[in-house]
Image (cartoon, rainbow, N blue to C red; front, top):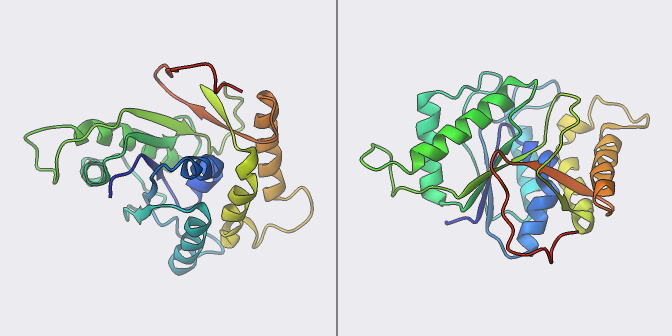
Length: 230
């Protein structure tokens, strides 16, 4: 399996929260898209490894993913260790994505910060020759960063993607994670899911559409043409 896009998420549900609409959009453009969850996300108050695995499978089907795996690293104790870097670099060599997506690098959640550090280091290791890594060297062209943060940030993204046509699928994929976003949260508005809709509507408004998702990049983003700008 060679992917066009590999989304790397600290926990199951982070990819859906941060860029579920973008994933559906990429699939509509015939891109091969995969998600690698670094941990199983457990323990949580209302979840279990079995529940989270079932929820992840259901969400993946809605998104139409070509590939999804879990690296099996420890939740709540995720570290950008040399061992974890080796494991992730091996996956990058195996699925050979053109582009990587990782969490935004500023966050209150230590797992999210560690995940981005790990992705950046593993991307570099994946291209090395004369190493003990399996497979052939591979270097993804770029890392983009999605926002799934536990801080009240007011970021200035590198770009905002119009996901208006795909909001309903993103919302449906997120609702699959009932143990995280429905059970125990109450139904008095605004609910957690209401807040996600409002946030997507805010980013959509910034570019003159109904719903949007923001993305960051440490490097300049190049364009071949202005024709696709919103």
